[in-house]
Image (cartoon, rainbow over all chains, first blue to last red; front, side, top):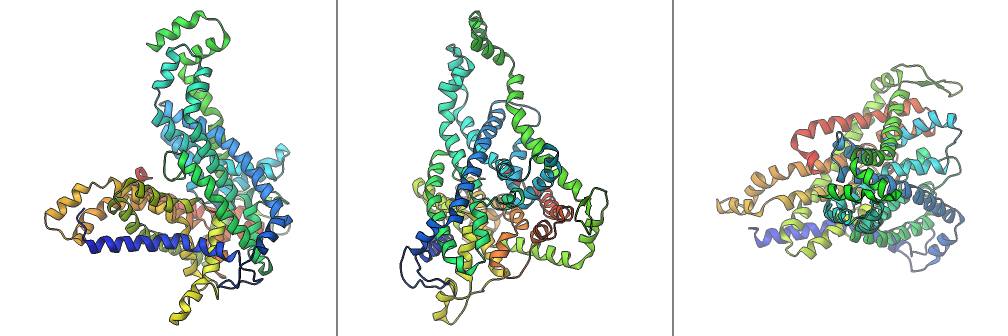
Length: 270
Length: 302
């Protein structure tokens, strides 16, 4: 490259400013969570764990976390099964409509959440009365699974393409049945991609609020919904801040792990 | 070769072997088995839901009971097109989406160029890309909350600007653009970075050898070649902004975006058909946008 020294420094400085823009707000949230003040104030007036303790003991928070975990596990399970099935179909076979299906998988995450939310809401409120199911946790799981499929699909399809088919053919040539080949050859090859996709699907579901809002029944409150409902209550501010800081810190490990395990740098979200 | 062996082991009559031999000879059956469940989910459940939404946007609700009347009419669309308030909010939302996209492009271009063409070691590149993508997975609400803490009156920005005698923009539409640009930034950086990685360094050197200064090379070589990647990123920033109603509630003061109309009609007014009709706005705009950018080759850059 033929950039002048000055241009390099300018680019470096601009990049540093952008990275600061990315991380500064998150840092402010973490620092502010140790602020003992009852009302919002910056800079913090001291250092204490008092709001962390209160957030941990808060019944609403605990209940919401448990709801989110159940919704996330359900959605992740469905997404892992369906996402890897489509990944096999797309990576291992050529068929009419393959490109359309790859597009269809991305659609629930490319369209704004409110579109997916309203669509599922219209469909559920039209169809569910006939089936005898009402809005509840199950409808949340169905909604979340729809947009979680794509991260599992992206991770597994990338792995299958990279792994190729020669090992599976060798296994078949050596007389293994389809099931044996899957258990001893294919599954070990895609295992870490499945884990990465599953972790990220769980993270995606754990963070979702829009689709949840439109598919949850009365009395169901996930953690994002709890945050949103308490965001505008001034006396809940410090607890919301502590929960937010906890989420920033807790998200780092699984997402970092998933990125190490997956083949792309975005972990398959793009 | 493998076909012959599949035939020779057929003598073994155990069930798993017979099954796998059958499956081997009928790839179509295997494919159907693999596709049936996911296609039911995405094709019937998801696309079906979109279809139900489209149909229910033609229905209406009873003014007194709030019950849905399943009779087809274009009344909802007529209201959306004729009431000036909806036009105002639609234009405002489009402008916000354009603003967010421009801000993201301006932030992403130097950063992505720096990572792709200035940073030399692979390891450093990897670290920087991870640093940009990690926040993609941080909670959306936490990011919104973070900008509230930053920009609210007496927030961190006001505090930092005070010694200079300035104060921040406070909560409002600029704050909304800033927070949304923040949330969608990784969606812009990744495709643009990939675009710069594909840009051959020899082209830049050739341009310099022919006497072009850095600015000229940028205008005549870099920009034309990076546009598809920029457009690919803009599909996300644009589409996701169009459908967002939460950020404007957190940092937008009393302002509304178009998706708030959808949300309020479901929540407060309980008018599902009208909400469905309003939700068609982001869909139609996104489809028009996709059709417009198809020629740039952006869709292959996603």
